[in-house]
Amino acid sequence: MRDNTISHRITYVGHATVLIEAGGVRILTDPVLRTRLAHLRRRPSPLLAQWQEKLDAVLISHLHYDHLDLPSLRKLGQATRLIVPVGAAALLRQHGFTHVEELRAGERTSVNGVPVVAARAVHNGARGPLGPTADCLGYIVGAGTQRTYFAGDTDLFPEMEQMAGGVDVALMPVWGWGPTLGAGHMDPYRAAQASQLIAPRVAIPIHWGTLYPLAIHRLTKAFLVDPPFLFREFLLRLAPRVDVRILQPGEHCEI
Image (cartoon, rainbow, N blue to C red; front, side, top):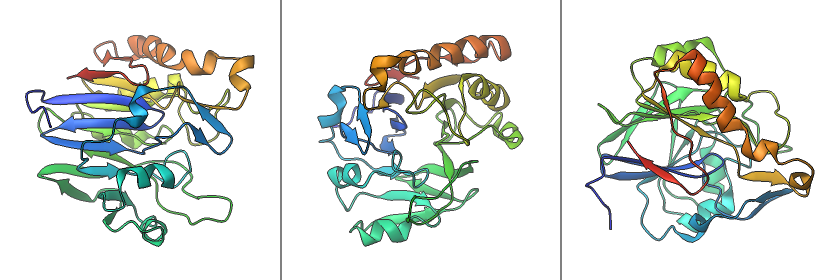
């Protein structure tokens, strides 16, 4: 049963998976809800088994395996509403998902009256090695004082400044799943620069502390721990008015 007394709740499930509860709806981003993903392992989380309540929609940012995970989506049900980038629907329908809606950057839809706007992302949209290619998106969910920006995977780009004044909460990717980052990602400093451009009231670092290659965490654990705290340090210098809230995987906060 939904708790409508809380106007805006963000739950960081882990990696790019975030539960956004605002305006009476429950929207989940890029679900990865299992303990193993190809060569990656996941830090334990009690939330992985807690999806009995109905979701109103799922947002998919792009086709990479750590963002569009078919077994996790099946756990949510093949009739779950999926909002995806242009180019992604055919793959999902091929696997039996029946309620798929494609958007391009700048296009909008609504989830039970709550607006969802697709935002640009700068990232590689190919599902390798032989899979399809689709657009990459972020999303802005909500209206009024409940606008949450989910960046998906993206690098910093100057047009982020166009979101200034239009975002209350920014879910900012600050790392990835290993000790190094590939192209098309933001590290803590670039994520702080992006947050300076966007100027949200609250910034919540995501895309860290969850997935790791097998045995790598025994050699170095810094990439599982440090990124959000570095992000906060950089943002204190660049945009001290932004309230940084660090959530460990499994934690939530109310805005």
